Structure formats: structure tokens, C-alpha cells
Image 1 (spheres, each protein chain N blue to C red):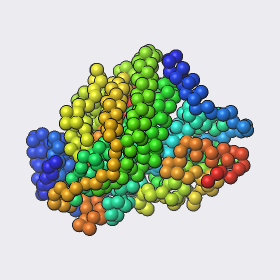
Image 2: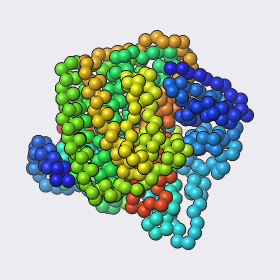
Image 3: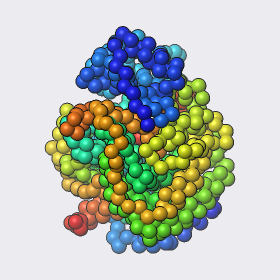
Image 4: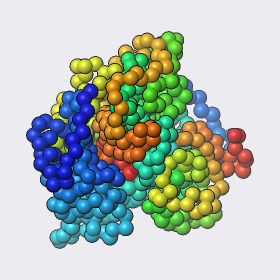
Length: 465
Length: 155
């Protein structure tokens, strides 16, 4: 995998970003460091890091997907971006309401404020709906209630000490976050992966995807009050999590990923047993999925609700199942030289990529058989502890992209020579998709929001960090 | 739908859950004060057919005004301090605070001091401590039931 760092003068920042985009590089994230501004780009296994000693101009007109990144760099690191007008508060909660909401005026327009505490067992976050009657005209998000300063907490620690902090950015994407961090550190340290290590991590990533997709289908059924579906998929998820515990000792696979190697050992008998459990789970998942297809009252609630247009998905940089449901066939698994996916891996797409709730549900349904196939193959042989091997010279910066259950997650690290983490930045699939989610809500009815929200099933914890 | 219902019926038979020996109930209100979302997953899982928390009289309610127990997850971020205290203020008395998970118990790994409020213990009177990262659904149930019946939970 090739890596290039380009140092850019602040007044050449926009031109360099334009050039990168014209050369086919795809934006992957923007963040602040003590020594200035960084932006990451990806192109078929290649990674590009642009580094400027200071921020000057916004790139939000060139890369609308960078809007949240610039707002965060402003609120947390005090950077200013000329041309990003208005630069609304994102992480800064001291800002008065007009500073972070979009003005919506007119006859009978009023606001409905929801959260941060919600009625169910849901993470904390605030939604401000501008509505006329039941019809939503605009949605302003105010997240970051769960901001724990995790990036700062991980900094100054050695790699092994920082990993548990980065991993817990999100319980449900713990594996993806930990692999992204491990890969970024190994990338910086010039360590190459080995087949056994790649297989162990791919197995963990797909086990994580399995229980998450089952969870999402359960949550989506709950979003329309379809209790038999909620409970059936919750039961399937429970069995997937019990398998996680059997294989790794933890239901959420915590602690199963470390940097520099893997301690995961699955003897032949355990692997065979796991394949048989997965075989049963696969059959019952197929039956439950089929039943969901024939529940007409449920399917009709999914159709045409919360549409993410292809154009918006591209413009806002949507990732993961939500992007694929809108027809953007991006998946970091097609570009994962450090993992054990086949070179010709093709992401599953829905039959009709309409970008609505129905399409987002169908992407999960289409991906589940792929996940079961991958797991069956990965468990075909016993798994033994593995380590990285020397691959090249060490450098300060490391970048990694991982496909979490919610989409592409970027991890960027800067390591000191003694291996201490100087800076770590995590841009998760949830972070990338929240702006796209907000875009799908206007025009829908307010009571459809829980369904739309659950069809994305984004995590607040790993956006807030 | 009938296939799903049959599947659930079989699942319930296989899970062989026993009828609770004693009666009682607790209305639970959950507040996420900065968790990693794993505690939320496990609290939700406690309602799945393998655990069925509701058979013990344990139910999550929508408002703190209807709650006996405030179930708090996460290390308490600076931004969730006010909403958390407001939820507690809204509860009728007698009221109980439960720390759900290692972070809420003040022994987690999460966070930078500048982004966090003082630990839950210093903000509210914590009466129930449910350890784990995250605590499994049966552990959550065991601790809440022990409190309900005035017992000490098994370690």
C-alpha cells in the first residue's frame, strides 16, 4: 500500500485539494493537529496525507463532506476557515441556539426539540425539528453530548495503552475502531501484515458486522412497532453475541484486537463448532428475513420514507450500507490490503437503490449471506496467534481505512519515535453519515423520524468520541 | 408473521425461563451520560426472549416521572451533567440511582478530565452498582432483582 505525505503552504491548501480531487483521490477526513491542519484522501489502496502548518481557507465548497470536520476543528482546536459561512457551532455547546440552527421562518412554522435524553434505551443526542404540523421542513442535529475527549485521552500513551481508549469510542464498532487504530500504527511503524493476522482481524470484523446487522433489523422492526420482527432478530443477535463470547471471551469482542499481532487462537474443533452454530443461525436468519418480506404492513412503512438521493449521498460523502442503498457502491473492504478479503470482493447492493428505508433494510438483508459466507470460509482452518513482520521504514504518520458495520472509518495517527501516540483522529462511519441522515428527513412526517434514524442506526458515541 | 411467532415460541421453550419466585416491580429510566453504547445494547438485550426482564416486573419507562430507578451509563460527560441532574430531579420519591457498568462506577478507561463531570458517585446517591464492561443482561437483571428483594447480589 502506498502512502504519500504532501506538505502544503496554507495559501496553496485549496489548490492542492482541488488537484487531488481532479486526480481521482476521494476525501476521507480532515482534522487539526498541534502543528496545523491535515486532510486524508484514498484511491485504490493508495493513501494521501495533505499537511498544512495552519488553516486559512475552507474547502467545504470543493468537498461538502468536510463540513463537520471543519466545524469540529474550529470548535475543538480554534482553527478558522475563511469562506465557510456561516461556520455553525458543532461541538461547542455554549453557543446560543441561533448559532447552531438554520433559521426557518414562515406561517405556522415551529420547532420540536427532542433529547438529549430519549424515551427508550437510546444514546444521548439532541434533535431540533422545524415543522409545520406533522411535516418536517428542516432538522438540526446537536450531538456531542457524549464527547469524552477520547482522542486527547489516548494521546501521550504508548500504542498498547491507547488502543483500549480508541476501541471504546464505540462498543458496537469496537473491532472496526481497534483494527483501524492498529493498522494506522502499523502503517506508521513500517510493519506489514501476515496472512494469519489478516485472517484473524477479518474474522473479528465480520463477527462484528453480523451481530450489528441483526441488531439493526431488530431495531428497524421496533421503529415501526413490529414486535415479532424485533424479538426474532433480537434473539438471532443474542446468539451471534454468544458465539462472540465463545470464540473470544467477550460478547462485543473487546480486547480481541491488539496492535502488532493477534492472540486469538481457535483450534480446529472450536472452529468446526462455530461453523455449525453459524450454519443454524444462517438458516433461521434466512427464514426470519423471508417472513419480513411478506409482512406487507411492515414493507409499506419502509417504502419511500427517508430518501437519500444519489446526488446527496455523493455530495455529503455518505458511506457504508446507507451509501450503498442510495446507489454509491463504496466499501472499504474492496480496498483493504491488510485484511483477508478476496481481491474481487464486491459489496452487496439492493435490487433497487432508491435510498429509502426499504433500500437500507435490503442492503442489510443482502449483506448477511455474504457475511455468513465469509465467516464460514475464515473458520475453515484453525486460527493461531500471529504477528506483523517488518515491511519498511518507520515514519511519523499512519493512515488506515476500515469498513465498520456503519461504513468507512478513518484512523490517522502521529507517532513519536519512542512509539508514544502524539495525535490520533478517528472519523467513523457514523460521523460521515450523520449529515446525510439529517438531509433525508425534510418532507417526511415527524413520527417517521425514529424509523429513518434506525434505518441508518448510527452511533452517537463514536461520532462524539 | 406466523413463522416468526412460531420461531419465537420455540425459542422461548428452549430458553426454559422459569416463572419468578417472587412478585414486585421496578420502573427503570435509563440515562446515557457518555457510554460507548455497549451498556445500551446489553440493557436492550435484557428485554430479548432469552432474558425477558419484564417477567420479573422490571420495565423501562419513557419518563423519569414514572421511574423508581435511574439507570446511568457512562462516565458522566460535562455536557450530560445538567440533563442527568434534571432527570433525577424529575423523579418522584423514593428514588434510587443505579450505576450501570464500569464507566458509571468510576473505574472505566474513558475520557479526558476536561471533558468529564465529577463521577456519578459525587453527583448523586448511588445505591445499586452493576459492574462489567459492559455488564451482561443476566448480570443487570441479577443486581436489579437483588435490590428489589432487599438482598446482596452474588459477586
